[in-house]
Length: 272
Image 1 (tube, one colour):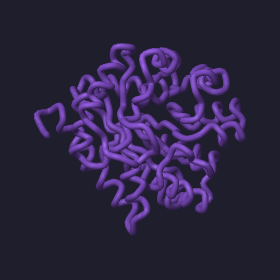
Image 2 (cartoon, helix red, strand yellow):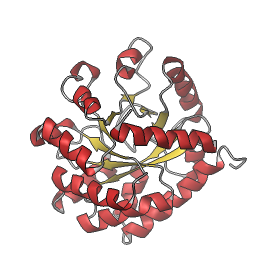
Image 3 (cartoon, one colour):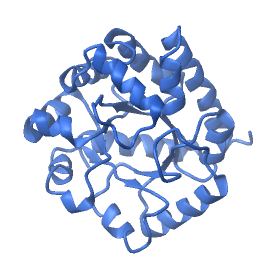
Image 4 (cartoon, one colour):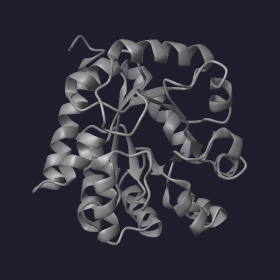
């Protein structure tokens, strides 16, 4: 294990040693503007984010709900690009050598950038992994395998419709963690069902020992705590990007992260 894959592995090892789950926070690069986005990113670790997912703004985000679509549009209007998103990661990494950062989004911007050039620049910037929502395992030669060869994690999504026959294909080249989507559909559309999440995590653990992070539908500290009791990490996105659209985006996002982190940390330490 090398490069970004090592940093993600160390973070989950530290979480296991601490006896708790992690908090994974999603924010959109460049939202509401490049400078403010950089300030939000820089403040996330101190607020309690254990792993950061940084959205890549894209014109056709088919898997995202209204909140993240709007965040992407604000970012594009502010001049966000894949190149300055990597610059943002590089600036973050200069001040934080430990917190994993994963880019999440769609393949098109990477394809247009050029896969080999992108992976070289991503590794140089200090990126740790990718979550690409529109590349199935059948297309692993396209990006997944080159990403692994570059020392970065390729994090796959599993959903309630990913049955036991499909799971081995999904998990084969997944590294870092597997992102379990707690319900089918677009982001931010519904609330999660804790019992269904618990059953799903148990099933995933039967197939692999890779950490499981659960997202979609987590908006409150109580929901984050419920996920933290059964999964290795809770992922929050839509609730945070909605705060980025408010009058005080930095303060709003970081305040919510602090409350979510409190919920996650309480879950395995005799709290909520």
